[in-house]
Amino acid sequence: MTSDFNEGLTIYRQIALTIEDSILEGILKPEERLSSLRESAVEMEVNINTIMKAYHLLESENILIKKRGLGFFVSPDSIDIIQQKRRKVFFQQTLPNISKTMKLLGIQVDELIHSLKKEP
Image (cartoon, rainbow, N blue to C red; front, side, top):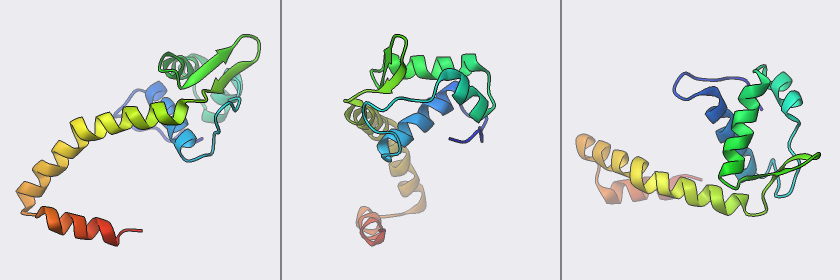
């Protein structure tokens, strides 16, 4: 994981999103153990409390499971949970913005569909 953070979101939320991306991309697998809080803090050059907040956020969303004395693990249901959460954001936030932009630029739906079909 990288320590390239932007100013749009808090660092712990950016770390949580990076972990989610790693799960969706198959880099982190269901039931796989994550790096310890300390290891992750050193790797990402952030305070250990920042990592703890990210891990606890994902635990509260059932994306991570904390096993006492063993650390944090990727939940078996993590992929479904993340996809469901991101679909909701897509349809409630992203798609309306795309629709507005299309109207402003005069882009027709069939033009968008044609363009999407060309993408790999």
